[in-house]
Image: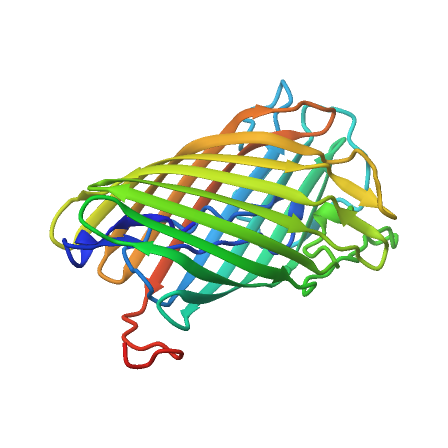
Amino acid sequence: MNFFVLKSFQNPKLAVLALLFTLLGGNVMACDICGCFMGITPYDNQSSIAFLYRYRSFSGYQGQSHPVFPEGSKFFRLGSQTDGEISHHNSDPSDYEVYRALEVRARYFLSQRMELNAILPYNSNSEQYNGNLNTVAGIGDANLYGGYHLLRKLDRKLNQRLIVGLGVKLPTGKSDVTNYKGLRYSTLTQTGTGSTDGFAYFNYLAGYKKLGLSLSGTYKVNGENRDEESIANSTTGFLNLFYNQSLNTSLKMVPSVQFAYEYSAGEKYKGVKTGEHVMNNLMAGAGLDFFVKNVTLNMAYQVKAWTVKDDHPQPAGRVVLGVTYNFNQLYYALNPRK
């Protein structure tokens, strides 16, 4: 997520706030609905382009070598792979689900208070049940959303920003991939959901000197696909605390502590909840961002802090790596003189 950092990066008299609120394009149940992993940026009201790689695992059974990186999983896997069989899990210690996304993200400021965002992901989703490993890869669902900077209070003491926005997820990814027998892979393994979804979000940022926090939340309304499958509406919240540290005149470092809460009642069929893949968990971890001129490098790692247990693979953890290039935007389409 683009949080906030003091504008001492560019001007010691002002403070900087920025947001890129995102959704995972393909797999809703493994999503980072609030998009908290775009890192902190010192560019206030600056358009940007970013490349982000996200890895998330669901496992947690006893007997696995590592809950976040279960045996047999691959941190980088951008192609499809299948064992040919589709089976249901039975709490086998080797069972896991891994979701990967390589995303291109673009942000454009129409004015100092209005921004437009777009995300196009390439997803690679794996599930291993009863020794059968299947990975489906391809273009995911695109996201388009706009935000308005409702509050922009910048002074020498307390700096604040409140951003609100709306967005839509479009069914650009495939949701009907089958194995060699013609059997369709599970809904969450598909690279797309096949549904059109909408969401609303807010992001509040505040900072004093080198310390800052970002509090954000989103509510997502999910539609049905042509097979009458859907995901129950979901709620996500993020809290991040960070510190701005200058290493030298051209290199900045911002460590952060991150918390993320996710809730969804899981999968639905013909409007009825199936009880599959219910999400009610809290993640916690750390992030580290570096800034060199117009380039930002983002890193984040989170693990499960708490979850409601069931017989499915449990949320285990996630890793995020990203690079952002920020443009020196001097003019705005809706206010070209400033």
